[in-house]
Length: 116
Length: 113
Image (cartoon, rainbow over all chains, first blue to last red; front, side, top):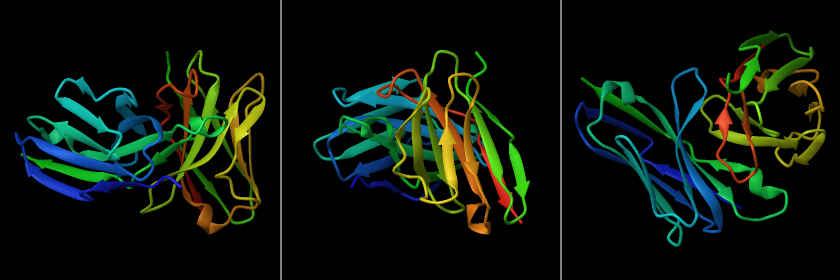
């Protein structure tokens, strides 16, 4: 059974810092991995999608890496801003074929606070 | 493109009533997924549907919960005889194919009183 763990559970940093959020998964047979952002009381916004054959994806100040063999992904946020404050969720799609491949397994999330 | 639309945004039901949650996927998306987020817990998969078919319902509680995605109209998640433990945020997502990234709706927050 796939399990996804995110560390740290919460992180508070001053504005301008570069930071790294970690995600690990127990079953390396994944199809892809997706990072989401969730604001309080809101839905999820997709940030980056990394296919299993890729090593990293970049979007603006965000960079996500994937090491499938070791079961790890990191989300790097450069020059953090107060507007980055949110919960960041990592989710993996298992490469099991058949009917299971549509399903995402989520981590518990990292609550990020960037203070001015 | 209006994105994934869920309604209502907030729903209050008394114990024993029925709750109906609606999800209209993005235009061109025929794959719909429902997830539940309980207070202080992560998002848990409930069910995966394609038009008129349930593909994977391994995350659905065995009783009181059902889902459909008819040929015409939105996907519906139906909870019969709601209990306090059903209070949660219910999120719908859609994709054009199962191996594509998801787009999530804003969720329906169900409160059972």
